[in-house]
Image 1 (cartoon, helix red, strand yellow):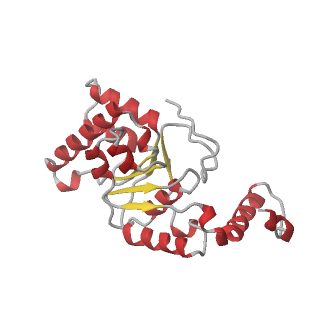
Image 2: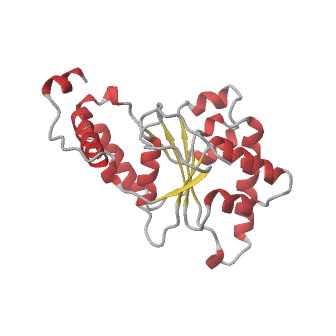
Amino acid sequence: MSISRSASSYPAIAPPASPATQTPATDCSCIVGSSTAMKRLRLQVRRIGPHFRTVLLSGEPGTGKELVARALHGTIQGTVGPFVVCYKAAIEEALTDYESGARTADDVVRLIQGSVRGTLFLDGISELSLVAQGRLLRVLTQYESSQNRVDASQRMDLRIIASTSDDLRILVSTGRLRQELYQRLATVEITLPPLRDRMEDLPELARCFLDRFAQLYGREVREIADEAMERM
């Protein structure tokens, strides 16, 4: 299964090679910006990160939902499993296998998570069909039931972060999203502000990207000209 991703999806540098991509954790230092909104966001991540079970990240495309999800995962204390990105097609394929009887709920979790004590990032949860939403609810319900029947030392400590560019409450009201799924995922909701609402962060972001790409391509670029910054 090979899942592609839009090239405009900031802040990922390259699309994953597989539907469930395991990557190292990060922390709040990757959330750039000194605006009030970004300070508040970093504070939310630090407070929620060590304790969350499910988090919903909402915001326009390009606001950095995956970046914040990685930061949340990076604040988990103790032994931590992988951060796994799971895209719409991969989710639906795994759920279809589950519905056909080819996999159990635990199998599906292991397939898309890859390890215990990890974080599963469901990217674009609002894009799932109603059929897939129903299957996902059944997987989560049966998975939780199975975990309650095993010894505590054998349980899979699964954390879920879902992202959306849509207002899920509107989707629920119009029948395009199952209310039970929304209630499960939106226990804690973090809304990410677009850059146009925090333009004071632009110079810091520009410097961050300049340093990153100068290092990547082996170039020595010391600064951004005033004229270039003004045009941005």
